[in-house]
Amino acid sequence: MDRMKSTVQAKEPRRVPREKSLCKILVFRPVAIRLLSLLTKADPDILEVADLIASDPGFSAEVLTMSNSAAFALHSRVDTVHKAVMILGTERTRRLVARTALEGMVRGMEADASVQNCWIHSRASAALAAWLAPQYQLHPDRAYTVALMHDIGRLGLLSAHGRPYAELLARVSGTNQTLMDAERILFALDHCEAGEWLTRTCGLPREFQETAGTHHRPVDGAVRDSADLVACSCALAQALGFRAAPAVEGEPLEVLLERVPSGAHLVSQFSAADLSQFVGKELEI
Image 1 (tube, one colour):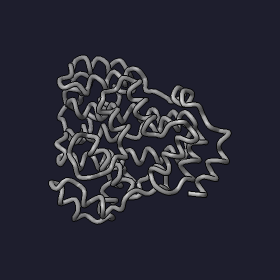
Image 2 (tube, rainbow, N blue to C red):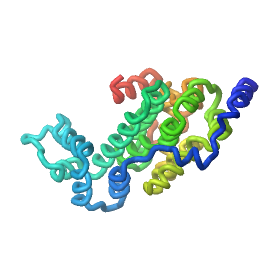
Image 3 (cartoon, rainbow, N blue to C red):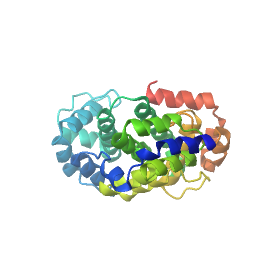
Image 4 (cartoon, helix red, strand yellow):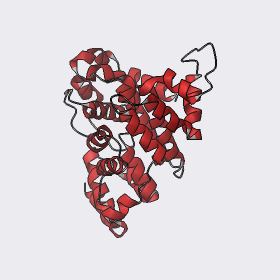
């Protein structure tokens, strides 16, 4: 802790006012925000969704590529966005939109190990969330989407403050709370607050706001909402070594597995190596 205090003191001249810190955070393109909001509705208008996707070359290319992939093994090629969206369905389309939007955000930032660490952590958390989704009564694609978005505040701070925040992620050791305390000292807010603010300001659904703002809540085995699943998958990803901040540790894997909802008892039969291999395969690393 003394080491952390001295580091923070040395950085005090770089403190950033809260308002300036928030205003500099990169936001999604308007079409991405509209799509995510539409696709989170209980009964989204598929034609409206398809029209929006068709208006954006990037999203159009992604849905057409996915619908024509081997995963669907169709006999004829899908050549319109409307047909592609019908084939993919609401949940798979939302998952694809979220990933495409975040990938665009990551590509827009300077290449850096911290950016890649954050992106890998988000994707690992998403893979674990989709795997555990049935135990939380959620559709796997929906679970994947909200978990993929949970660390958007950290990506936002990287886009806003670049090297200073990347240095903090690389240097701080200790717990998640240690890192969040340091973030508040240097940038006037932590990555959970940044994520909640960013998703709320973008007009994204409350589910995204809650998971972005509370993903470090204690993992206690409760099945209240998607935020519980995201907290669990985030903690598991961290325990397996897929960390946004390499020297920041959470709870041990063995402890976390004991708190996974009882319906997922088979998860506890996997070793750390098994789980790491599963996530690595999902990440293609």
